[in-house]
Image (tube, rainbow, N blue to C red):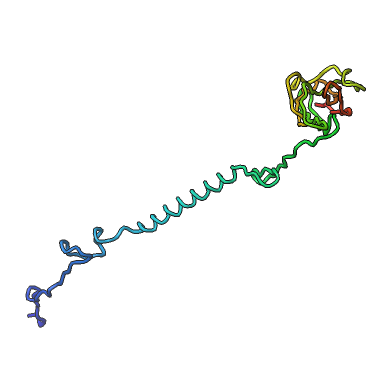
Length: 200
């Protein structure tokens, strides 16, 4: 015979378990830590703030680039565009003639190069012709060159004014000789002779 006594578990009275509702959901009584319905979505508020910050950054960048691309006009005719300043200068009234001829030092064979020049007079007037006379040999007079530009050949052009023209360099290496020329009140005016070195 066994000396120890067996205790039947059925004789043990069950302790009452108190189950309470949580998070305002009285219709389901269980552990809130395992209840997806009761848990707030994780990170939902932080994602909302990220969207707001992202939109603000995009709008700020768009406004910045739009402002950079809008040219402004400053004092004394200075044009401000992308941080660079270009001075707009009127051509002064001078003795009748051709002034401020600008040519490149070098050009490529067969390429295009530009020439700038000013035409002025003691008072505002109009001219019917101005051009660049050029050739492959040095000449003492504008009339001796074999080529000329035709951008302002005929018409009515107010002076003083700034003029520009393009010249196609020869296909062979060498030197281009040129002068700016204008007819003012029926009188011929020419500039000094300038040279452009042409190479491959």
